[in-house]
Length: 262
Image (cartoon, rainbow, N blue to C red; front, side, top):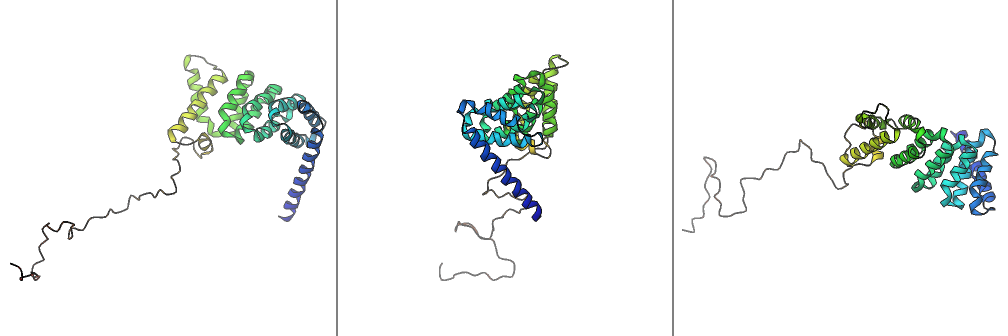
């Protein structure tokens, strides 16, 4: 345990040092030139450390120029296509609101890795899955089958929705419907299921069984009533109305009566 902690701390320190160095280097160039300079840093790195280098470079570059995320990712992926999934995922984590544009930039620059790009981002950000997948398949239609396969490998709970999407897309007589049409129907079915169950799509995608009804979490003040709870029955021996007749006493019991009144 101690050795593992020391090793992890050493790796973290090394990563921090690399990040600081890349940030210093990139800060010396004008903002419009940061994407190209960052791409060169990744391309010149050692092969065995290229993916880790790419992630550090992306984080440093986006700290300096966050609005250039798609351009940054596209530049890096054009020069070093193999790091496309890692680079796109790191950039989308820093700029989640730009996840779809980042995925598109990476996939256009490195189309052979489009499926892995989509799957990697969707696994980390399931709420953005539909938007990311459709943006990429629209830009790189030839990667459609690879995108569907990669999504099923990364997120198995998508399977029933993609099966329905394929069936619906093929209902018009097309034996080989486009991936764009299949995914459009698939995510429409997913959104409908989430709406019907009153939960978010990430909850369905993370569920043990996406076909099992998922109940929304009850508020903290809610106390469920057990089916075995016995309801309270009012006591017939007392009433709030003094004019109501009283039940007669059991046989043999003395009747108490105030004889001072007529």
